[in-house]
Image (cartoon, rainbow, N blue to C red; front, side, top):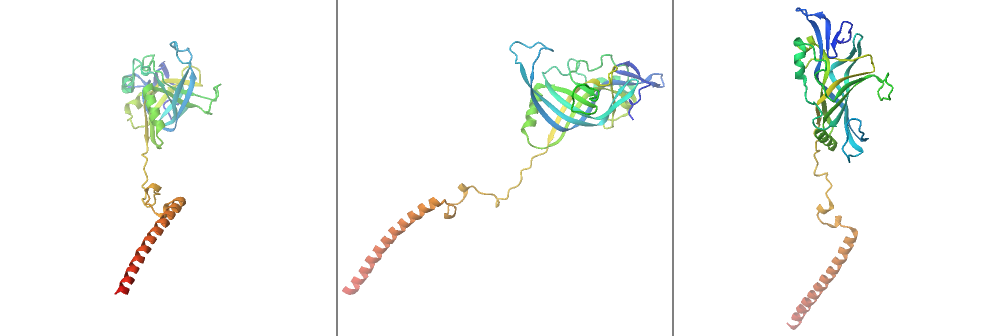
Length: 314
């Protein structure tokens, strides 16, 4: 059972801080704080999708002469983790529990990711564990464009390929690095040996777990559904690394006795010549043989006449 399965005794200080009914010896309530947490995802079903999209002016004014369409590429995969993310509400408790995340990585211009704070897991140390204190009401990853989204398609009016609740990571990396990654993945036909993504997301963790757990331990995280909506839930997230390892492609050994030599490499013989060449060679050879036989006949005739003449003349 998750720490966030039952939430009847949770008291929300703000959207990033929970006080529990139990107290420490000094009278302070135990706390769960929502701070940047690092989670490794093992990837399968890796795909690259390329599409052309219409560019509108809803979010930022485009300079004159900008193209109306833009080519976009998206890296998608399905990731699993040894940790658990429990989606919960206060005071209802657990809504769903996951160890699988659908991953979507997109490019963004340099400087859009991390923004001015560039928050990392180290920023959460001072608000978690035995040093837990109230997290600022705006959280620690303000301005981060990426999200970790909870969605229940059974209550959603939009069409979906999913038939049960799921988590979707929508993260970004700089355009130059994304393009380089896409090219490297596109030019190789070697099988993928291992692929991982490390995401950092604002998630709740009980202070006792944060204090006593080691990095290799199973982690119990919580994603709070804020408000009354049970269909959607979102928290800020960032993709910190994407790693894809390929198996080496072995070149099979070739038996020199089984290799078919090209015709140009074979020694010339009557066995590997075309019929027309053979017929031409045969004709030329017959002419030469006839000439040589004629010469030999003449020589033999003169020699015989010389011998006979010498015998008769004594």
